[in-house]
Length: 95
Image 1: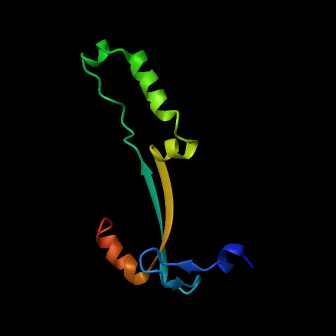
Image 2: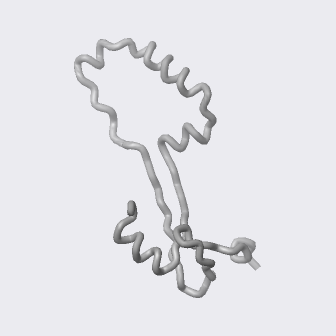
Image 3: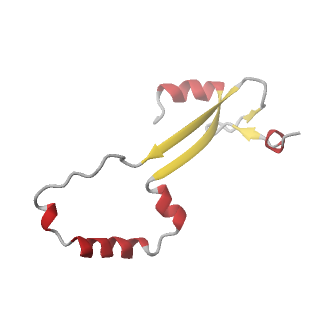
């Protein structure tokens, strides 16, 4: 049998145990991507010391690991919600 189906699944909101194949829950996949649009530059930006700014950014990032850096621009998350929690969530995902 599939190892994933053997592991218990719980609702992310209420912690109810969910049974695969019973049709009583939802799988929600969330993809979050940092602003994908190119930055806007004005005349003032063209006169800044870009090399110093890049060096400053690299210094700020030097203590961060690869996952921390990746999470700032891209994040994928899968959650399971029971039918009741899904009905509440889909109407107000931030609530």
